[in-house]
Image (cartoon, rainbow, N blue to C red; front, top):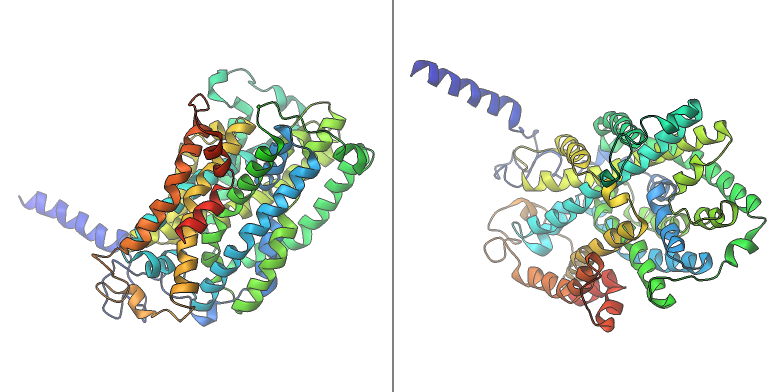
Length: 492
């Protein structure tokens, strides 16, 4: 009995000292409220840590525009037969539609210095906000893995530039059903390891990462743009490529699907930006910076189109094009810069939001750093290369999941702008049980019902995207092509 009591005592001591998070002085938890709602990472950011200037926030979107995942959406549209010019217009429309929600949520985060999990409590209730966090967290952890496969492609470009024989290293040792080769799996693992130390950089210090990208990445894009135009003999051959839709759908259907996929690529930021902008000094200037930088810097496509002219085939992954280059120095530095851009985007766009979500659900045990580590582990374990394997599958995944995020943000915007008329939150009540934001047993039933009403009409389209053998009315499917916007408006 004494030995058992001694073991239990040691486990309890380990639990209390190493697992439970202890609040810092002056936090909401330290003032008497249960650790169920607060810890240091959930509390409002103190003024001395609000170090992001407007150009840091704008620089995030400059950096975001240069990651392969963003470039793959318009490239996927070209791969599916859409004219490059129409693909570019569709991407611009999608980015313009998502810019407003991104700026507003970012403004709220900066004004009140709080993250998405805390903002969601005002609309969904203290417990109801868990649902919003789960919806966002699932998408973030999947995207973390998908981005990792792209980063792995960038690492492979670097290794093949140094050792050309690496392209054939154990190339057929894995079965085709694995959807990944041994070199790609090794490169994915290397990228995952290189990304891991960045998870320990404090959020307030990540602004320096964007500062570096602001300087380097635009020069890189100019080089890529110049290469695409040169090898394709000008813009004419690129945009004269005709539409070649072989799926049986109209050009308009694929055009709207491209808009949905473009929105899907940035839909998480319509709820994520508060996690970053809570560190911004000036809410208004950071929102203006986003309004200009997001649609301009994200709308980029030409590489897939140029591949059709130069290589005679449709290559929808920009890193696949770089692997075909003969210039080893160009291949290495392009791979290095793509890897650098992907690490920064993956951490800020996926890892940090997931960490905030799991922190919001388990504040007694989770903080942002622990959450990021869990996100990295899950991102590896989920085999993301299966999603990444084909253009159509990637397109369906990115566009499809956004139907759950559109209603999510639509309710928050309606609640803050229309119902509350942008009146200030009661900050103390956002961390209090049975208070102003408790609603009915911790849930705002109206908000949760509105979310369900916004998602339900879009589910048949999502089901068809997953299994096209199911017969479905064309009107339902055409309605689904703008699912994020439809869901946002209906739920609001």
